Image (tube, rainbow, N blue to C red; front, top):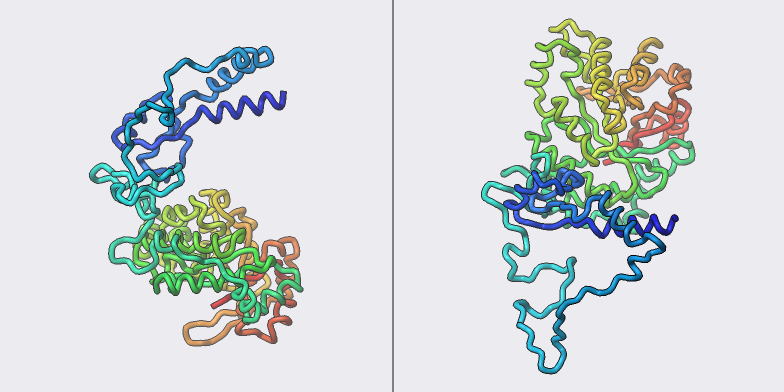
Length: 445
């Protein structure tokens, strides 16, 4: 029976085809009862349609017909009558076929004189390019907007981002590489915390170099993931939605090649979340920070580009006084909004906390280190161990004893640590971090 079922499924699979047709024909397929377009991804080009030759239930009936009574029908079947011409036989005359006499299969490139190099022709006003720079199924532009700086999707796809063995060996000797090795001895999980936005805007060569450098550091098995940008859409690095989409797409694709199997994360903030239900506050925050409106941040999570989103809470500690929203209320509002949107289904959500450096009370430690987790909105809290303000003053994490008491959520706590500015030395610092945290984000150049 197991063999019979496997054969039935194989027959069913052979009865399904995906064909390439013109956009005009594709338009009619929307009302076709045998259309299987719903099985294809949203980013499938418009000229590709799916059509059932036999629906699954029909395919099963066909398979059972041929296999009934110990394959009796199949055994009795004979080849269909037909007229076949052997062009090699003497006296046979076969027509000459146009072409260059080169044998090709479906994976061969199109002939050099094919129209547009073999790219299907679109109707006026349509974008159906399949080179990764056209319009996606969700209407977003995969390439760059005209006049934008940065590496477009086509250029990124042509780059080789895989680090060499020499790159990996050299990376192990850098401060970040030595920190990764030291972290392994403490048992903490490692994330690399880097910034690729400026390299991406600088052009293909700078971008490829930066990605290979990060990929070389991430080659070690104790590295769990890479956070490749911070304050995405909140700072002044990007000016348009198109730039952000193009950057995240290029960076994610490149890092998937350079560091396969590693999780990818981004950091940002959604200012409107702190407003709660205050509509005037939300309107003002969306006006001030249009690139980090909630729906735009969510769109980044609705693809496979981002595995983890870190939402900053430190940026919520001021700016909402006009609506009588204090820091505690802003933080509470934020996590209610995140939980209501079920973002944890789309990616891992982490709370980024910078407000525990310097002198803090035990109550502040307990609240800021656990509120996001206790509210059920975040799975992880990232605490900075050192923060330098605009005037150059440095505030350090001092609440070590209080953090050690949070043993029940230790596995959810991560420290953000820069190995180029150690408090004692990297090895000693990481041993101390391991007493209160289970993960560490190592800041890399």
